[in-house]
Structures are given as C-alpha cells and as structure tokens.
Length: 199
Image 1: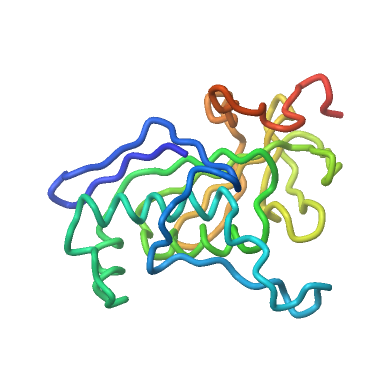
Image 2 (image 1 turned 135 degrees about the vertical axis):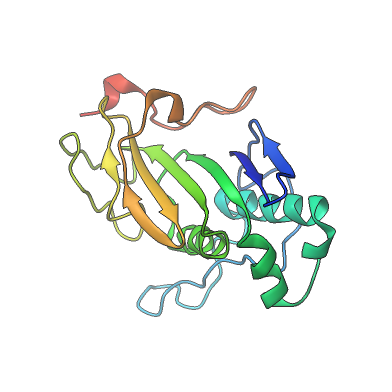
C-alpha cells in the first residue's frame, strides 16, 4: 500500500510503500473498519474467516495513521470521524497478490465512502491458481466466486486487474505499468505474477 492524503489546510500524510500479509505485521484494529462475516448462503455462514487479511490490515493501518496525525480523529463518535475523513483529498494505491475477498472489498468500500474525495486504486493479478480467468484487453470481467470486482478491466499486458473505488463506488480502469503490484522486499513473490503464465 502507498498513499498521500491531505486535509483542507494542506496538512498531509504519506506512505511510499508498506507491506502486509495475513501473518505479519500485526496491525491494531481501528474502531471503524471491520470485515464481514461469511454470507448466509456459504458453507461457513456467519464465521469470520478474513479478520487477518492483508487488505483489512492495510485499511486499518491507514485509519491509525490518520488518528496519529489528526488527534481529533481519535473519537468514538461516528459523525466526527466521518466529518474529518470526508475532508481529505488524495489517493491510496493498494496492490494485492490476488482478488480481494468479499470481506476486504467491504472494508475498502467503507473507507472509500468515508473519504469520498480520495481515490483508491486497487490492483491485483489477472490470474492465479484459484481463479483461472483471462479476458481480452479492456473487457469487463467478473472473477471467480466472490473474489475480484465486476468492473475490473484487464491491463494492456494482461497481467493485472484494476479497479478504482471512490465514494464507495467501483469502476474498472486499465492499470499503467507503474501501478502493478510489486514483490515485497525479502518476502515471498506475488503468486503467479508472471507474464509468461498469463493466457
């Protein structure tokens, strides 16, 4: 994840690049962003399987950074939090190794709704072992099951899907090369992120 956001007075916070996995690092849960339970029609209905997912951690890390930079945001009042969050402008880039699950997408939409003037760019691999999907360039797609976004569009090199989320609304976009998910330093490579393996 990387971001740069600022308020109306031009006070800003930014992160060049931070990495999260389901195992590490630990990120304190913010008050406002929690994932969804498994849907009623699933085999594990009501369970919380995604409370440690990387995307959830990234959103909570951003919320925690906001509270640190703007102490007034450290509040239990939802209206106060949303009033502060709605004043931000900027962008957040979230590169994922696979299509985000229903729970993570819910959290991304939540924070996007609270920060309607911030654009969230979400990118992820166009194909992995669990979601064998390929499409022609520029076409809209719906990835396997509850993963991915209906409006995602395949990039010109057929390696990533791209979605912008602004004010809780998702739209597909063609991902420029500099927006592709990067491998974490010293960690496992992004799974199946190999141009030669993409159909």
